[in-house]
Image (cartoon, rainbow over all chains, first blue to last red; front, side, top):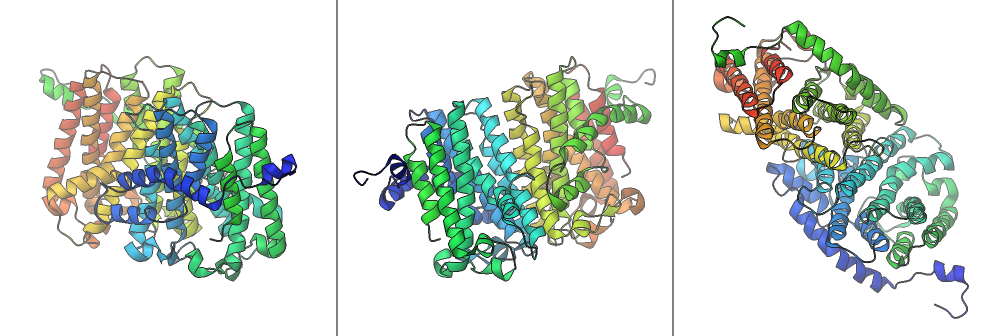
Length: 317
Length: 317
């Protein structure tokens, strides 16, 4: 930290180098990747299991699992095996919901996308019917992972995790946002409408990731809960603004998916609404709000959450 | 009961007239229909909520909700408000999973069906994209209903309900059975393979309905749990055998959907495998197994479950 930086500037600085974040993420994700590999589609019949694994394994930034794990560490600095187990399960569950939404989103009746993370999309590889079923089965599996019969995770924590995830995934969350998105093609949304659409479509699950991580630790003080909730909301919005920016400026190879699609489909984006500079300013504003919310939470160790907030805004893919 | 009937014959007899069953069902379903009407798609945005309601309300025999309620009454004859609330929620949840599976099943990439319960299917009415999303949102809502924040339902019961439903809906349940079904078109399955496919595709959710009803009452003696599980498995199988029979013999107007489709698609069915008479004998055999399982359960009042078993086998639509 530069000598003489004001407290606000200290808070706004990224606490970790890219290498530190990368090391932390690698150490935390090892258990998640291992769990996903064991749990996803292992016993499902015929092509279904293969399609489920293809959709989930070996791909993605795993931002949502990292948010779950970072929030659980911030909420419960002295950890038990039960909290760790709950956090890994919650991390897998949000990733499965995210993965299923991508599979269904890519289908011909939705975005009709053929490329995802640099690979053919699930329906291109396995056919539409198995892609549809794989998405459906991934959603069910997400909830199954949250309610293990033989684990030490308290039933109240299990039920709360299911509640947070179901609300974030459903008609008043992700699926609702996608429906608004569908209905908005060719219409000119104002910023408030665009925000509401993305709050549901992308933001709800990112926010739920943070809240689920915190829920693994049991009951938190109200200030901590509110701080984490506001952090999650700001991160969710920032993520989408940056997504819209990358859709315009990114190298398609680095991004691993088709670029310029939203503009081509005449879909409203933050860039079309605010311009590129305006969108970048909006992302910085959300970053500042996210960091301020962590400050208010009163939680002692939020370094990972702060580093993830910077990553969301500074990423180039 | 005829004088001089042997105990086995007494057990095999339908305890209720059609009118008694109809009265019981009407009284029990009133709360379920009311709950569905309040909970499904009420606040979801734009066309999504409408598509969700169209898929769920005003349709169907509600067999799964009736199984949930009958099993909960058998398991907890002296009921509390919390058990009642849990049973209504579980009844709605299984019906939502069933409804979403029909919406996705009817899509062009699956069965491409245009008629369901005598009405245009959801994608015909709302378009494929909103039908896809409505199904996704209905699945999330099913889990949401099982984990209310403010109810007296114990967290352990909530978590157990989620576990039973998620397992029955996912890759080792309904979605898995649908994938086997997809892969089997044009192949000649033997009876064991056909049974396994239907055990997952239709049976798992019917069996889960019974087990979820019982779970609303909390812990049961092992004999009661095993009896209800076996009853559910037999009912699930009988249901599909009768479905296959009706696909051949029923009046399309009474059935409310296209008939003869399975044969036309060269899908394996119990009728194609066992012949019509053989399929009818198989349904009767499963009925006998279901009733025997209830006997073994040791539960005092299983009249509703017995009447439902007869209804499943004797129905004409």
